[in-house]
Length: 435
Image 1 (cartoon, rainbow, N blue to C red):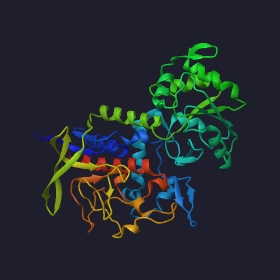
Image 2 (image 1 turned 120 degrees about the vertical axis):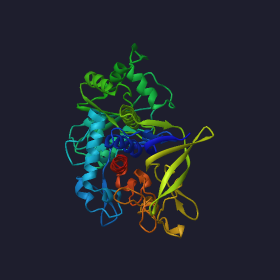
Image 3 (image 1 turned 45 degrees about the vertical axis):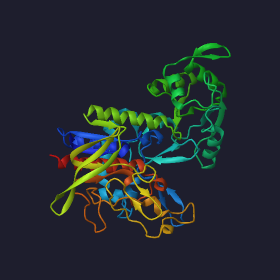
Image 4 (image 1 turned 60 degrees about the vertical axis):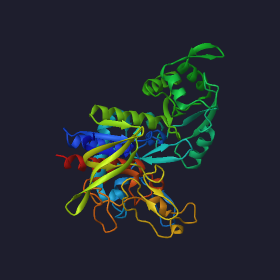
């Protein structure tokens, strides 16, 4: 027996989750399902919601953008932002703000915030977790960065030096300390968070005490007049606000988190936030199952997807829907694949434009603009993938996120913003088409 829904979203990252939420919002009584095979890529993300951070300059260098909405107007027509329009980007951010509630900041202005990252670089971003808010690089308060010996991914002294060299308007120092209660350098970031969430008892040189008090006692002697302290993003998962407040009170300084590389607690928190919202919206989530095939039918002159086939523990289960959203990721997420001869979208075989000669897929300059970074399906303004003749591949399929081509999210720092905007537009159109 086929499983039947009104909207089926394939992919569980930011684009897929947003599409499912938008479809549910656009058609209140619609049955919306999200199908995802692997763990969400959100756990590898910084948790920042970037719209557009950098633009190329005439000398080939990347220049940070102060107002991303002004810059959107000058993007090429092939860019996903141009396909959906600036108004849709704003609407998508407003939609995210409603979902995120007080967990994120940045909605008060169109200008990018400057958030320090674990390498000492500064990332322009439109929305950022409140846990990072006290650490913005536009703030001129002197800063102490704290790293831990068992967390080599965050070299606090080096990060502080990089901030100084980049011209940050404050003095930054970094120290590397021992983390009370953790002596192993292979402990997961969730272990640090759990210890602080539950204020577990740990042994210190002066006896046993709570983890939060122990951390504060370890850091406080190293303060030298700084009014804010930055930690790697490990300050709690279930109760991060309580952890930050406790450390701030004990240190007499504002406390913030510095986004880390994967696995990322801010990314995990964002994943939890989105999937809680999906549950509240009544979206059905089927996880751990790959979509392995599909069948089509004719709808006038354009083909339509009749159903997809999901592999559940070796059993092939058909899933039918009126509308479909493809949000399977790009080259990294295997939503776009390549071999020595061609580049493909493997699930529906949607058209992916690319040079015939694979040596034209890249340039020798490692820092140059790589053609492969822009590989992906080409959508119309409703985000329906187009074939080589600019006709919709399927009348009831839309695409969102990194599976779309025409932009370089790594160079532009636009990945989350494109996923959010295109997920919102694709999901909204899919939901409205069901009514």
